[in-house]
Image (cartoon, rainbow, N blue to C red; front, side, top):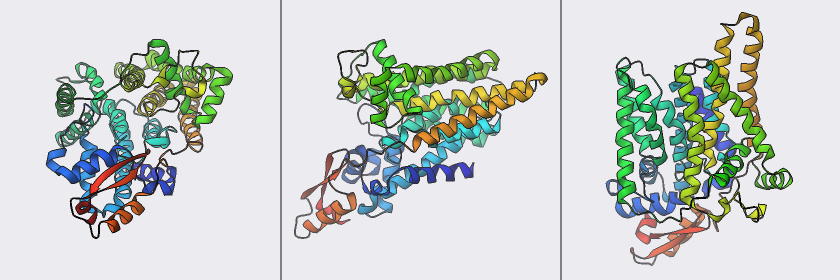
Length: 426
């Protein structure tokens, strides 16, 4: 597990350009940093934003702000997010030990957390998109079977944090009737943590106003968008490359890619245990539902994939809603590989072939995604100036200014936040 954490942290640093580590991204600045500086820790920790809770990002900001100089805030945020990403991958490896017992398959599940190509574009290393990893962790938490009460309690706290960070994780509560059993009492703390976090999220959705342009795009557009933003980036992630392939062959390429995961799903349903089938259904259904929910709430015009009159270059590609969706879809392959590997012991005549297929599946998935990641790009550079330069410049302008005077600092993507001179002098 420790090695997976290290791999996760290192992969985050390797995948993001060094110059982008000095840039504050979106809500990391205008919500988590500014509100913490303006209103303090306890006033903001459970404050809803955009209609739901952001528990872990707010907690992380509360750690980053007092522990580092203001000019180093994006570096502190990146370090925290890299560590949490590594811990998420290690947690998936650990939590899956009962339902995916083959160790190479579990390692592949952990590595999916780090090598998903699309994550590099926007999601890695910032608090605003940390909820993608919370969504990825949710089903593994609910389907795990802790051995000790102390570990069950610890995972229950993690479940609370996860469900208080990603509102769509509420979907996984549908698993509870299948996993909470008298014969498995140690699953109860995890279930309780998930339920409390979910109830809190639902109350926030009801009581906190969210400005939204949500739109129902219809099943054809949602299916097309799923192929473009979840399936296609598993192999082809450079935006220009994606658009070129879509213009040449439409949705043929992502459809062929999807067929590989359909085969993995069929294998799980045919040969898997009851819990493995439940996991396969949860992964497949949630992968599409999460993507569909995200774009429906977003409502951007570029999601009309079924509109033949819309040019390819006007359609959204490589959207962040495909990140957690893509991880859940990719997990079908290690699950199926573990099932095939276990079947080898029951079919001696085909044992060598089955084990070879299992090894080929997990190694091929991780290798393919790793290679695709080398062609991914980071879009964090959409900013007028680096954060450290802006802080130093505006701090100098405050030398003769009143403490309550405010200065504007640019953040990505093409936004800005306002901080007081008193805050800049801290």
